[in-house]
Length: 110
Ligand code: FES
Image (tube, rainbow, N blue to C red; front, side, top):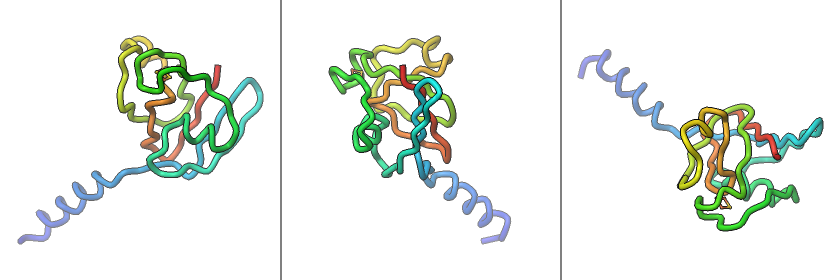
């Protein structure tokens, strides 16, 4: 195998490695709380572990009760049956379905 082909494979395999933040920052007004993130947790699970309250109802991606705003970073939602494209473009996320996928993750609580 030639070396240029191998290095391309290396780049592709490293692109598949999942990224997650060391901390999730929860912002509410002027307050910010930094919580250690455990890989695979949703934003709601991380918040609850730290005693931060996020209102929820279905916890299945259907009701929108947990809607929060992503201030920094990006998330992958397991399911979204509520938020529109405009909501998503405005940074809204379903916290009960959102898994952080970037080095940084900051969420504004409403
Ligand atoms: S609690 Fe219903 S969508 Fe999150």
